[in-house]
Image 1 (cartoon, rainbow, N blue to C red):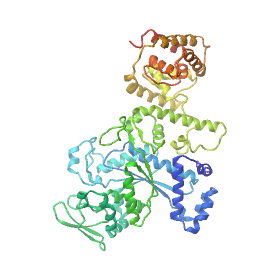
Image 2: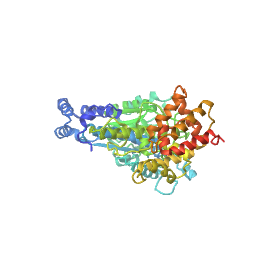
Image 3: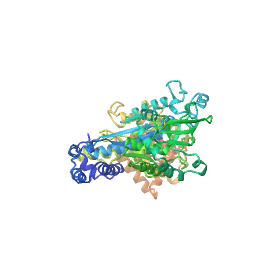
Image 4: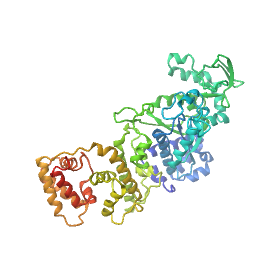
Length: 559
């Protein structure tokens, strides 16, 4: 699938390919000797990536992409974004390098974190209260399905990711600490404790500085993750001493899962131990990334390439917060739009803040469909170069479908509105007349969109519809439009109808002309915006459109 794309990918300008080229530079800089880099560069420029890997074995080690998951809560829209953006960059890297350099996406569950806050959306909260501050994988499952709350959330995460077809390696923080995978780095932090403290303490408030330690010991008596200062360190033995909850001085190893690192040192330890090459995070974590980068360097490692994306805002332009519950949930988006439209929205302008609310779904859906159509149109015209800068290419991870939807989402919405179609069967009665021979089986995407349009109309459009009576100028123009439509030959297409609508608006003196279309939407559909009117009339039917206009002129829609 990705073979032969490197020359096109090298010239690509979209942000994933910019990140992919930075990653390729990083791989050469960190893995190759100075004497090897010139050879690698020459082979890269010729697109001979398989030859480069065969000649320079250091390139054969996988490039590691990583994203994190807070296992104290259920997967959500942010989780989707966390996995989507590194996947998009990973796919661009694979295209750039002809898949010669292996890659791997690690989804890391922070399930050893202490449960500090009880989620609102789970049962048996009193039971969780009893387990507060224990690692999430030691907290009892409030749903009664798994051995722990962490195991329950991890299972939900994996089912969530699998459902969207992500290619990933799952890692549990608890298992990683207990298996010894982090032991070497943990001992290094113990040995360089003062250097880590010198980085961390200036970032903290005065009260927290007095007791801060990068190590959070897990009490052998209560099993809770403690915010306890480190009182003594024994580098040779690999242990720390702290005061347990009952005040008893207790010595534990820093290895083997007996301690958990504070989150910024934990981030740094993970990057170092797993040799992470790429991690994306929100703009609100820029300072935390800088701090973690400094800790990585203090540990003798190399920080990953960081990609910072802007945050989503709600309808009031307030930052979306899980604790506030504002914004839009994954389930809500998928009630009204396709997963591809959501991926497209995540892909577009990641460096710009965007509203994440219900009203963005129709526009995102139609923009995605337009991009898919543009990509396939280029192919149909004989342009065999894969359109790697087209968002649809990235949305579909390099394998976009050859068929989109012949009807836009906004047009379906207006068809539902005008026809008062409450089921897909009613909607398909119009669609089949507009597209002879089309069926839900032959147009599966269109069939999905029909269902989404009905949901969106019932929940958002219908309650907000406000019909108005036409002005005298608008009334005269609509009467003229009726005459024009009646004079059309049978089977007139959308373009012919649109031309007549334009002509009537110009003759009536609407300036700018969009005021004419706004009047049509407000008077006929009870809303201020809509699709191309010619397309709407073609799919709704010219006779039905004429009847709709005559009902509006008679005042029936307003009443």
